[in-house]
Image 1 (tube, protein in one colour):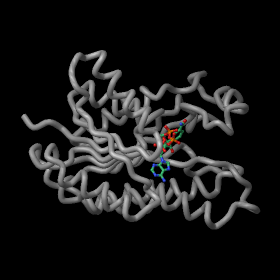
Image 2 (cartoon, protein in one colour):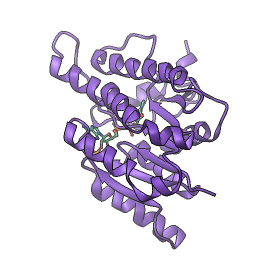
Image 3 (cartoon, rainbow, N blue to C red):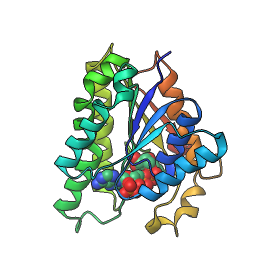
Length: 248
Ligand SMILES: NC(=O)c1ccc[n+]([C@@H]2O[C@H](COP(=O)([O-])OP(=O)(O)OC[C@H]3O[C@@H](n4cnc5c(N)ncnc54)[C@H](OP(=O)(O)O)[C@@H]3O)[C@@H](O)[C@H]2O)c1
Protein backbone atom coordinates (compact mmCIF):
# COMPACT_ATOMS: atom_id res chain seq x y z
CA UNK A 1 0.00 0.00 0.00
CA UNK A 2 1.21 3.54 -0.80
CA UNK A 3 2.56 5.55 2.12
CA UNK A 4 0.51 8.65 2.88
CA UNK A 5 2.35 11.95 2.47
CA UNK A 6 1.62 15.24 4.24
CA UNK A 7 2.97 18.79 4.04
CA UNK A 8 2.49 20.84 7.21
CA UNK A 9 3.48 24.50 7.11
CA UNK A 10 5.04 26.06 10.22
CA UNK A 11 5.56 22.63 11.76
CA UNK A 12 8.82 23.06 13.69
CA UNK A 13 7.15 23.71 17.03
CA UNK A 14 3.91 24.00 18.98
CA UNK A 15 0.71 22.70 17.26
CA UNK A 16 2.36 22.01 13.90
CA UNK A 17 5.07 19.92 15.56
CA UNK A 18 2.52 17.92 17.58
CA UNK A 19 0.66 17.20 14.33
CA UNK A 20 3.84 16.16 12.52
CA UNK A 21 4.71 13.77 15.38
CA UNK A 22 1.25 12.23 15.48
CA UNK A 23 1.18 11.67 11.73
CA UNK A 24 4.69 10.14 11.73
CA UNK A 25 3.68 7.84 14.58
CA UNK A 26 0.75 6.73 12.43
CA UNK A 27 2.86 5.87 9.41
CA UNK A 28 2.73 9.08 7.42
CA UNK A 29 5.73 10.64 5.66
CA UNK A 30 5.74 14.32 6.64
CA UNK A 31 7.26 17.37 4.98
CA UNK A 32 7.99 19.54 8.02
CA UNK A 33 8.04 23.08 6.70
CA UNK A 34 9.85 25.69 8.82
CA UNK A 35 11.08 29.26 8.49
CA UNK A 36 13.35 29.70 11.55
CA UNK A 37 12.66 26.57 13.64
CA UNK A 38 15.15 24.28 11.93
CA UNK A 39 16.75 23.07 15.18
CA UNK A 40 13.33 22.34 16.73
CA UNK A 41 12.30 20.35 13.65
CA UNK A 42 15.57 18.42 13.82
CA UNK A 43 14.86 17.64 17.48
CA UNK A 44 11.38 16.40 16.53
CA UNK A 45 12.96 13.92 14.13
CA UNK A 46 15.59 12.86 16.71
CA UNK A 47 12.84 12.30 19.29
CA UNK A 48 11.01 10.05 16.82
CA UNK A 49 14.20 8.12 16.12
CA UNK A 50 14.95 7.58 19.83
CA UNK A 51 11.42 6.44 20.52
CA UNK A 52 10.96 4.18 17.51
CA UNK A 53 14.49 3.06 16.70
CA UNK A 54 14.08 3.99 13.06
CA UNK A 55 14.72 7.04 10.89
CA UNK A 56 11.97 9.65 11.10
CA UNK A 57 9.71 9.46 8.02
CA UNK A 58 10.14 13.16 7.36
CA UNK A 59 11.96 15.83 5.45
CA UNK A 60 12.52 19.32 6.81
CA UNK A 61 12.03 22.08 4.23
CA UNK A 62 12.89 25.68 4.96
CA UNK A 63 11.00 28.54 3.29
CA UNK A 64 9.96 32.07 4.17
CA UNK A 65 6.35 32.11 3.07
CA UNK A 66 6.58 35.87 2.58
CA UNK A 67 9.07 35.33 -0.23
CA UNK A 68 7.87 34.35 -3.73
CA UNK A 69 11.07 32.53 -4.67
CA UNK A 70 10.91 30.47 -1.46
CA UNK A 71 7.31 29.50 -2.25
CA UNK A 72 8.29 28.39 -5.74
CA UNK A 73 11.18 26.36 -4.30
CA UNK A 74 8.87 24.76 -1.71
CA UNK A 75 6.36 23.81 -4.41
CA UNK A 76 9.10 22.35 -6.56
CA UNK A 77 10.71 20.41 -3.70
CA UNK A 78 7.40 18.81 -2.67
CA UNK A 79 5.88 18.16 -6.08
CA UNK A 80 9.07 16.58 -7.48
CA UNK A 81 10.02 14.66 -4.32
CA UNK A 82 10.49 10.94 -4.90
CA UNK A 83 8.11 10.08 -2.03
CA UNK A 84 5.33 12.09 -3.68
CA UNK A 85 6.02 10.64 -7.11
CA UNK A 86 6.35 7.08 -5.81
CA UNK A 87 3.26 7.19 -3.59
CA UNK A 88 0.77 8.71 -6.01
CA UNK A 89 0.76 12.33 -4.90
CA UNK A 90 0.16 14.40 -1.78
CA UNK A 91 -2.43 13.07 0.67
CA UNK A 92 -2.57 16.02 3.07
CA UNK A 93 -1.78 19.73 2.95
CA UNK A 94 -2.12 21.49 6.30
CA UNK A 95 -2.02 25.28 6.26
CA UNK A 96 -0.75 25.80 9.81
CA UNK A 97 1.85 28.61 9.57
CA UNK A 98 0.59 31.71 11.29
CA UNK A 99 1.41 35.06 12.83
CA UNK A 100 -0.42 36.46 15.82
CA UNK A 101 -0.03 39.95 17.21
CA UNK A 102 -2.30 42.42 18.93
CA UNK A 103 -2.66 46.08 17.99
CA UNK A 104 -5.61 48.44 18.14
CA UNK A 105 -7.37 49.15 14.86
CA UNK A 106 -6.60 52.87 15.03
CA UNK A 107 -2.85 52.32 14.81
CA UNK A 108 -2.39 48.99 13.04
CA UNK A 109 -0.55 49.47 9.74
CA UNK A 110 -1.47 48.38 6.24
CA UNK A 111 1.83 46.48 6.23
CA UNK A 112 0.66 44.36 9.18
CA UNK A 113 -2.68 43.68 7.53
CA UNK A 114 -0.91 42.68 4.31
CA UNK A 115 1.45 40.33 6.14
CA UNK A 116 -1.49 38.63 7.88
CA UNK A 117 -3.33 38.30 4.58
CA UNK A 118 -0.16 36.99 2.98
CA UNK A 119 0.54 34.23 5.52
CA UNK A 120 -3.06 33.27 6.33
CA UNK A 121 -4.79 33.69 2.96
CA UNK A 122 -2.48 34.18 -0.04
CA UNK A 123 -0.03 31.41 0.91
CA UNK A 124 -2.76 28.75 1.40
CA UNK A 125 -4.25 29.89 -1.93
CA UNK A 126 -0.89 29.58 -3.73
CA UNK A 127 0.24 26.32 -2.11
CA UNK A 128 -3.10 24.58 -2.72
CA UNK A 129 -3.13 25.75 -6.33
CA UNK A 130 0.52 24.81 -6.88
CA UNK A 131 0.09 21.32 -5.44
CA UNK A 132 -3.33 20.59 -6.94
CA UNK A 133 -2.15 17.93 -9.41
CA UNK A 134 -0.49 16.01 -6.55
CA UNK A 135 -3.52 16.48 -4.25
CA UNK A 136 -5.92 15.34 -6.97
CA UNK A 137 -3.96 12.26 -7.89
CA UNK A 138 -3.80 11.14 -4.24
CA UNK A 139 -7.47 12.14 -3.53
CA UNK A 140 -5.95 14.27 -0.81
CA UNK A 141 -7.29 16.46 1.95
CA UNK A 142 -6.52 20.14 2.64
CA UNK A 143 -6.89 21.59 6.12
CA UNK A 144 -6.93 25.28 6.99
CA UNK A 145 -5.98 26.14 10.55
CA UNK A 146 -8.34 28.91 11.57
CA UNK A 147 -9.57 29.83 15.04
CA UNK A 148 -12.70 30.44 17.07
CA UNK A 149 -12.82 34.20 16.40
CA UNK A 150 -15.38 34.08 13.57
CA UNK A 151 -18.66 35.93 14.21
CA UNK A 152 -17.44 37.81 17.29
CA UNK A 153 -15.66 41.12 17.87
CA UNK A 154 -12.11 41.03 19.28
CA UNK A 155 -10.21 44.11 20.44
CA UNK A 156 -6.78 44.56 18.88
CA UNK A 157 -7.09 41.66 16.45
CA UNK A 158 -8.85 43.09 13.37
CA UNK A 159 -5.90 42.30 11.06
CA UNK A 160 -5.64 38.72 12.37
CA UNK A 161 -9.34 37.78 12.58
CA UNK A 162 -10.15 39.24 9.16
CA UNK A 163 -7.37 37.24 7.49
CA UNK A 164 -8.37 34.01 9.26
CA UNK A 165 -11.99 34.59 8.16
CA UNK A 166 -10.65 34.85 4.62
CA UNK A 167 -8.88 31.51 5.00
CA UNK A 168 -12.05 29.92 6.35
CA UNK A 169 -14.08 31.10 3.35
CA UNK A 170 -11.32 30.04 0.94
CA UNK A 171 -11.36 26.52 2.41
CA UNK A 172 -15.17 26.37 2.26
CA UNK A 173 -15.16 27.51 -1.33
CA UNK A 174 -12.50 25.00 -2.33
CA UNK A 175 -14.45 22.20 -0.64
CA UNK A 176 -17.08 22.77 -3.32
CA UNK A 177 -14.79 23.61 -6.21
CA UNK A 178 -12.25 20.81 -5.77
CA UNK A 179 -14.77 18.03 -5.08
CA UNK A 180 -14.90 15.14 -5.72
CA UNK A 181 -11.11 14.82 -6.01
CA UNK A 182 -9.96 16.77 -2.97
CA UNK A 183 -11.62 17.24 0.44
CA UNK A 184 -11.13 20.55 2.23
CA UNK A 185 -11.84 21.27 5.90
CA UNK A 186 -10.80 23.54 8.77
CA UNK A 187 -9.73 23.04 12.35
CA UNK A 188 -10.41 25.93 14.74
CA UNK A 189 -8.36 25.75 17.95
CA UNK A 190 -9.42 27.83 20.95
CA UNK A 191 -6.97 28.60 23.75
CA UNK A 192 -4.20 26.02 23.30
CA UNK A 193 -0.79 27.68 23.78
CA UNK A 194 -0.44 31.36 24.59
CA UNK A 195 1.63 33.67 22.44
CA UNK A 196 4.33 35.44 24.45
CA UNK A 197 2.43 38.74 24.49
CA UNK A 198 -0.79 37.19 25.83
CA UNK A 199 0.68 34.91 28.50
CA UNK A 200 -0.34 37.32 31.28
CA UNK A 201 -4.05 37.33 30.46
CA UNK A 202 -4.22 33.71 29.21
CA UNK A 203 -5.50 32.56 32.63
CA UNK A 204 -8.47 34.92 32.37
CA UNK A 205 -9.25 33.43 28.93
CA UNK A 206 -9.07 29.89 30.29
CA UNK A 207 -11.59 30.83 33.02
CA UNK A 208 -14.21 31.30 30.28
CA UNK A 209 -13.72 27.81 28.84
CA UNK A 210 -16.51 25.40 29.83
CA UNK A 211 -14.11 22.45 30.10
CA UNK A 212 -12.06 24.52 32.54
CA UNK A 213 -8.61 24.18 31.00
CA UNK A 214 -6.50 25.16 28.03
CA UNK A 215 -6.21 22.57 25.28
CA UNK A 216 -3.10 20.56 24.44
CA UNK A 217 -1.43 20.64 21.01
CA UNK A 218 -2.23 16.92 20.80
CA UNK A 219 -5.98 17.70 21.14
CA UNK A 220 -5.69 19.74 17.95
CA UNK A 221 -3.46 17.20 16.19
CA UNK A 222 -6.04 14.48 16.84
CA UNK A 223 -8.79 16.56 15.21
CA UNK A 224 -6.55 17.05 12.17
CA UNK A 225 -5.85 13.34 11.98
CA UNK A 226 -9.58 12.58 12.28
CA UNK A 227 -10.36 14.85 9.31
CA UNK A 228 -7.54 13.37 7.24
CA UNK A 229 -8.98 9.90 7.77
CA UNK A 230 -12.67 10.77 7.34
CA UNK A 231 -13.26 10.24 3.66
CA UNK A 232 -16.85 11.49 3.68
CA UNK A 233 -16.26 14.82 5.46
CA UNK A 234 -15.61 17.97 3.44
CA UNK A 235 -16.41 21.67 3.92
CA UNK A 236 -16.51 21.42 7.73
CA UNK A 237 -14.81 23.17 10.61
CA UNK A 238 -14.07 21.36 13.86
CA UNK A 239 -13.73 23.63 16.89
CA UNK A 240 -11.15 22.29 19.33
CA UNK A 241 -11.83 24.77 22.09
CA UNK A 242 -13.24 23.05 25.19
CA UNK A 243 -16.68 24.48 24.36
CA UNK A 244 -15.46 28.11 24.35
CA UNK A 245 -17.26 29.01 21.11
CA UNK A 246 -20.69 27.98 22.47
CA UNK A 247 -20.36 29.46 25.95
CA UNK A 248 -22.40 32.62 26.69
N1 LIG B 1 -1.87 28.49 19.79
C1 LIG B 1 -3.18 28.59 19.94
O1 LIG B 1 -3.69 28.52 21.07
C2 LIG B 1 -4.07 28.78 18.74
C3 LIG B 1 -5.36 29.29 18.92
C4 LIG B 1 -6.19 29.47 17.82
C5 LIG B 1 -5.73 29.14 16.55
N2 LIG B 1 -4.47 28.66 16.40
C6 LIG B 1 -4.01 28.34 15.02
O2 LIG B 1 -3.40 27.06 15.01
C7 LIG B 1 -2.24 27.08 14.16
C8 LIG B 1 -1.01 26.66 14.98
O3 LIG B 1 -0.90 27.54 16.11
P1 LIG B 1 0.51 27.83 16.78
O4 LIG B 1 0.26 28.75 17.92
O5 LIG B 1 1.21 26.55 17.01
O6 LIG B 1 1.22 28.63 15.57
P2 LIG B 1 2.41 29.70 15.67
O7 LIG B 1 3.39 29.20 16.66
O8 LIG B 1 1.86 31.07 15.88
O9 LIG B 1 2.99 29.66 14.18
C9 LIG B 1 3.43 28.45 13.57
C10 LIG B 1 4.62 28.71 12.70
O10 LIG B 1 4.29 29.58 11.62
C11 LIG B 1 5.53 29.88 11.02
N3 LIG B 1 5.53 31.13 10.25
C12 LIG B 1 5.10 32.35 10.61
N4 LIG B 1 5.37 33.25 9.64
C13 LIG B 1 6.00 32.56 8.63
C14 LIG B 1 6.55 32.92 7.37
N5 LIG B 1 6.54 34.18 6.91
N6 LIG B 1 7.11 31.95 6.63
C15 LIG B 1 7.15 30.68 7.07
N7 LIG B 1 6.66 30.28 8.26
C16 LIG B 1 6.10 31.22 9.03
C17 LIG B 1 6.58 29.94 12.15
O11 LIG B 1 7.65 29.07 11.76
P3 LIG B 1 9.17 29.21 12.32
O12 LIG B 1 9.08 29.03 13.82
O13 LIG B 1 9.87 28.08 11.64
O14 LIG B 1 9.67 30.56 11.93
C18 LIG B 1 5.80 29.39 13.36
O15 LIG B 1 6.54 28.50 14.16
C19 LIG B 1 -2.12 28.51 13.62
O16 LIG B 1 -2.65 28.57 12.31
C20 LIG B 1 -2.94 29.34 14.58
O17 LIG B 1 -3.52 30.48 13.99
C21 LIG B 1 -3.63 28.48 17.46
